[in-house]
Length: 131
Image (cartoon, rainbow, N blue to C red; front, side, top):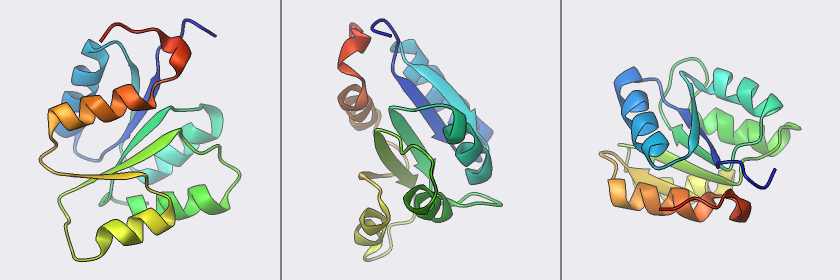
């Protein structure tokens, strides 16, 4: 699979935010899927490997914290990198999320340059995209 684009899953319950992120990332050459809550994201990760998971912390049904816990305990293949996206900047949240397996915390509104840099860093070497 040396010519595949990197795979990104966006777990975000706000369809406008999810569509904007998807459009941005697809315009840069990545393959992007959406999940409207954590349960759908977990289902998708059971059948597909993602190089990057953009995970909203606060979603209905199954939230981002529960997704992180499930990734640690279940036999789901963990994405290459897990980036939690949240407007919640409570004291200690970064450490709490890191202990659950989050690699990076991005605050909302998302810094587009930082997001694209993280996406580039998460892509498989064989993707061979022009940036």
